[in-house]
Image (cartoon, rainbow, N blue to C red; front, side, top):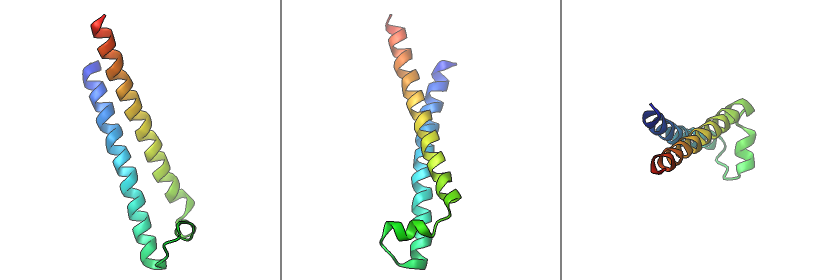
Length: 82
């Protein structure tokens, strides 16, 4: 059970980190087409805060899942050697 859980956590965390990056790219692309500005602050002013928070939540939740999965992998390897 733990062996399956650790790889699910690592894979899910990696997927969510990638998804958060893709969300940010899509948001920047959509706003850049309207403003044609390279200034990050000008782009962020056109993105509603709740959209930006979704990408932040996805990133942090993915990071937590990835770190937890890696910790479970390390813990199970240490436990199996003792």
